[in-house]
Image 1 (cartoon, rainbow, N blue to C red):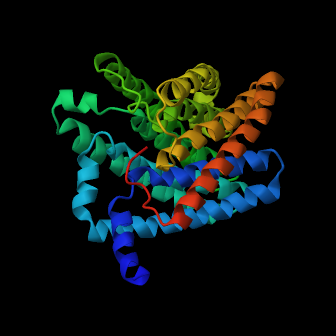
Image 2 (cartoon, one colour):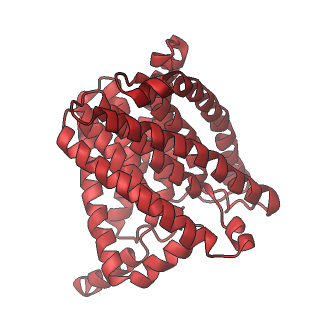
Image 3 (cartoon, rainbow, N blue to C red):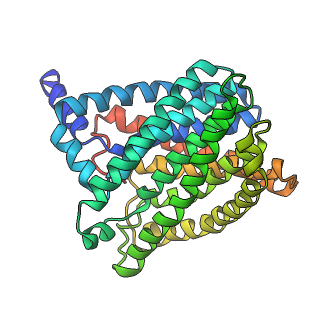
Length: 351
């Protein structure tokens, strides 16, 4: 009897798979980078393998969903509340590539950069048109949420990987620097655009406890990865684009690190308001990884600003934040493992 039901359960799980599930790769990859910076090399390597396996599995599942559940895929693409989750594929690709580049796997990292850049470009035109521009403005604003910031995260992840590869590249160094500067600058502009939409939704419509889902943490993650990308751009040298953006990138990085620092306590208060005051149950979902990722990225941002700006206090903040991010990752991974072992469906909701 159990064998007869498994195919149906699997199809249902694939049909309801959240577009945001590549946040698992994003979160695992950035915590692996943090652990490497903390010299916990074996733990970092273990998370790298987990991120790589998760990336491969999610590609297979999404390909299956694209082939067998095209109606559901199209519905997600047209839904302003879910469509921006597709950008987690781009961000997960580049974060994984960045971790591989740290260990010297330049060819694999370069291939992932190409995939990430192409996907961000294609999705950057496709998703806003399908989910936003082709719909009525009132409905679009009502459905704006924290997942929209993944658009920025995806663009900045391209900049981070390109800048990481630029430091050791021979041929193509100028091109990598230019890619890093352009994508960093574009995503920087998009942050303001998305922040206006999300703030407008929060002010215009009633906010219920169920509305403030974990993906709102991506607002902090987007500010943090903008900081990381800026510090990576500031570290580049020898390319015309790098020289052009050096000082500006460092100054902007400090501004966005300050923004991420300001958002952090606000998100904790929102969580208290949602789960303690209004007693919304804390159930596992793909949105958990959208909370782990900003924690890991904030640690990387603090290390970047503290190191490049030579501010030891900020670097120390990053040192402590690594452990918070790692603890959050272990909690989320334990919840995911329990969920898988229990045989429940994954990703029916974005949160």
